[in-house]
Structures are given as C-alpha cells and as structure tokens.
Image (tube, rainbow, N blue to C red):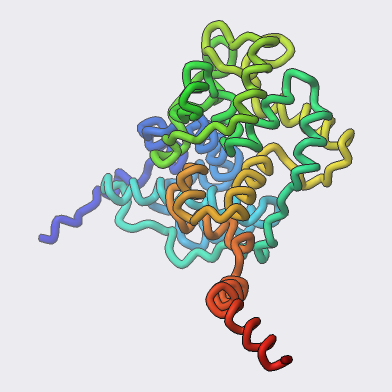
Length: 324
C-alpha cells in the first residue's frame, strides 16, 4: 500500500558481498578508492562481513566502533564508520534492507585540538639546506607557494608561467597500478583548481633547479628523485625525516608544515580569510579559519590598533599640552 515493501530474500546477502558491489560502483579518485577498500577489508569485514546485511543490528555496529576505538585514532574510526554508514544507506535505497542500523551510534570523542605549530623562516631554510641538493627546490617551493605535497609532486613545467609569475594548479601526482606506480590525476576538490602567484625568489629557485635536473620525460613533472622518477610521498617523507634530524627540527615537523608556513606568512602580512582560502585551495573559509584562526590578530589587537590609529595623535597632543 505504501510502496515500502522489501523482499526478505534480498537481505540475506552478506554485508561483504553487498559492500563490494557498492564499492566497485562508486566514482572515487584512485587514492580514495584504495582507502575505502583497505578500511572495509581490514576493519569491517572481519567483524560484519559474513553477516546477512538485514540481520546486522545497531548494537553490532556500536560494538565494532568500540573495538576499533581501542586501536585506531578517533578520526580514523569516524572515517571507517562513515564508510559503513554509506553502505547501509545504499542498501536502504536499493530496498535490500528496510532501515539502516547506523542509528545513534556513539563515536569516540576527539582530543582537544592543540594550537597549530608553525615553522619559522630559519627552520625552513635549515631543512632546505639539509635535504639532498635536488630536493632543495621542492622544499622552498612548498614554503613559497603553499601547494599540497601531491600538487607539488605533480607540478609540471608547462604549469609554471615564469613571465606572468604564476603557477597553475590543476593536477596532482597519485599512486597508480600502471607501470611506474604513479599517475597524474585531478586535484583533491573543485576548489583545489587555482592559480597561485609565483614569487620572484621561488621562480629563481625553480629556474636554477631546472638547469641541473630535467623534468620527467613522460609526465613532465619538475621534481624527480635520484633515479629520475617522480617524487613519491613515502620516499620523500624518508628524505625529510633524515634532513629534519640533521637540521635539528622538532619531530612534529612534516612536509605539510611548509603549507602551514606559507599560510602563516600570508596571514601575518595582512591577507584576508578569503585570500588565504583561495591560495590554499580550501573548499570553504570555515576550513581556513578552523586551521589558522589563532594566527590572525584577535579582536583586542584590532581594537587597540583601530583606536590608536584614529586617536593616537590627538591624545598625544593633549597630553603634551597638559604637561606644559
């Protein structure tokens, strides 16, 4: 009568069988597709995979989340749970089950977010000097234009306009199953497509780099490793860790902190939230503020500066007149 009938036989399919059908039908970027497959295979299928999808109860989903919380970070548990909830939503839409068991499931609370630590210019230069010579431009370019590591690794020569002094960001390097293990793919989000100003100092560093090391012959990317292959994240993090120890940088410093350094320089130079958002390729200003709000001058600083600008001179003259 209501059109809500669900065939009881449909729910006898196992969670793993349906989830695999759902997973392979999704339009995911290569990195996301690999992450989804690993999360389901490692963390979900061992607990729910053999169960008929219609028989899984909310208490079982909660038990799975609780067990995962004992060994995984709260953020990772939330991502894994999100994959499970997406599978059940799809099953409801396909009328495989009547309702989703992902209801009122309590996730582990995240620890209080600590203030973002930012590298100093001296620290950036120290690690630039500590890495092998062919990686020096990679470090300084990351600090000078704020690209994500995948965007940096995928930066091709034809995306750099030395004359107009800007860099076009419309690709990133991702892992792939094709020969060579890497490929160029679309950026992280639609907002990641952007054009970033190229400072003269960074342009000089890139030009000097290109006189010594040619771009990759097939992909055209500027930065390559000792074998002439594109720089991959895992290899680069190893190079970074060695250089970090040599330069005496704190252990929290990662290649991504070059992007934070870039943002901090823009903020301290007076850039607005919207400008920083555009340069970093954030999907929303909220993301920018959530990450960097503590770096912007607070309201007290702005209030003092505003009043001093308007009344400072007049007050000083008044005090001088009273003194006389």
